[in-house]
Length: 240
Length: 239
Image (cartoon, rainbow over all chains, first blue to last red; front, top):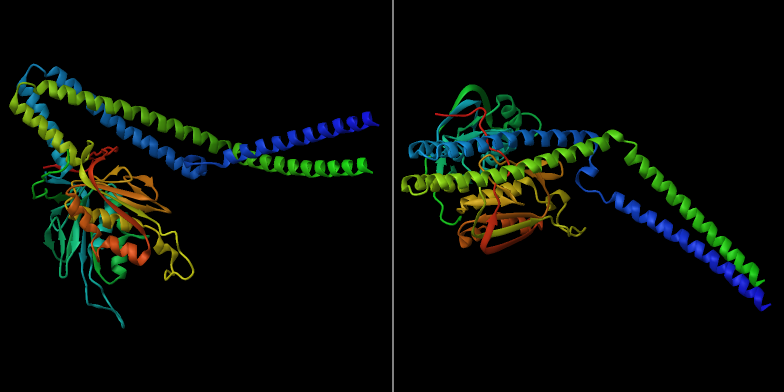
């Protein structure tokens, strides 16, 4: 009798052992699935997104490569011109000139567009709504749309937009770079004409939105748009 | 009797277990097919990773080349004050243009979505509880107005051509997708930059009317990274 019970126990233990094993297996599978679904970034993307992502990286690579070649060429020039102070000065001046262009310290010219916005504040849009004034937010949105479309230089009423340019709304006028501007607002941008125009026109484009709100917007494509240089001094006190 | 009960219990357990296993296996199978049968997507994923790696490698090479260029410049201008002045102007211009890393005193502002929308909340539109691109644009604009000399948003340096845009559910800065919380850092006079948090200001409005979580912190020293993109002129010419 005793012997029989222990045999039964053994069978039971083995069965339970197998059951535990099966359970563990299920758990591991579970972990694996969880791991698989713990997806970030590109794992989550569908085919079309992935294609966009791929071309993005390829374009970025091309751009970076151009810059890389440029830097390598400059290094070589410096190494070659080491002996002559005059040539070195020339190289430094060229580099500085390029930087000044980036900073907005030079007048630039090229193809682009001119957006003219007439503020129709106070006009009657419909029976019970009057047109509201254009604010800094409107101009800021247009600036983002233009930069997003690859603009290389922008000015508003002749005020060059640089990295630390601000747009402020006051009661009767706006201020750009601390200078007053009034309607009509003339925004000039250099870059691909069609990209620039389509960024402010059409779906969600802010030029169209301003028209719907009762303002008058005209856009002219121009082969040669001239944009003034930044008039102020760029001084820094805190950055090191 | 005892034996019978035990076998029934064990048999039942096995049944449940095997059912569980088969369900599990079925799930795994279907997940597996979803990811692995779409070979084009997998291939594309690999390609994207490879393209990114290629880019990263080149970026590292560029970093090194830029360091070397600076070294060469210093070598070339040694012992000549006129040239050293020029070299310093280049260094300064690089900082202002966002092409080199900068440090200084300033402020850190974080903006995060209001995640406590309840039914008794005055908010009717859940959309207004989110931080939008325009909020980031406005805050950055106000920082510029307060005299900031360098600004970054989630590590993306704000340069002249930076666009802050909405792309579906995310915001892109310099074409790079970023998500909440938005960490905006600016170098300048901390007290003046902190004036952004004044009563009736834009930040206060976001906080009080939309429940956006806003924190501001004055900093003795922050580091703002350089712009990682490339600035080039294809259409514009200097006159």
